Length: 178
Image (cartoon, rainbow, N blue to C red):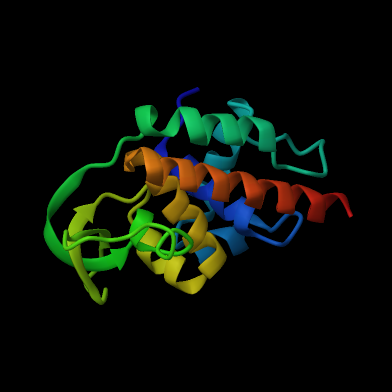
């Protein structure tokens, strides 16, 4: 079973979701994907143990997710950089890292998006509809930005992204336990 970039995209949405278990149709609408694509992503993620199967109430496998995102994401799904374009800021140029990382005069990484308000260097998202879905859900946007910092950030950016991701995992795990 081979993971695809959209599998990580769906897993990050599940992490950002406050619902214990959202229906595939709801996730699909929020992610701008088809329900069958979401279902296939969840099945592949369960097969690779990033998510627990349907027999477990808590679908998130925080330990495996943390290990994979922090140590493997940059090797498995490195981003493609492109030309100067208009889009939605990501990585260190988006919250929650924007306030922590000083931005120089360089163009920031952006997901290409015609309705984006920021000029920057094109940064290929995990899935083509990421800019649309991220602008609809700020928590999901932060997860995607942290993942992008892990995919292509410098050491300081990756360290800050790792800390932010681990903190969010702890908070989500505590919330689900209560």
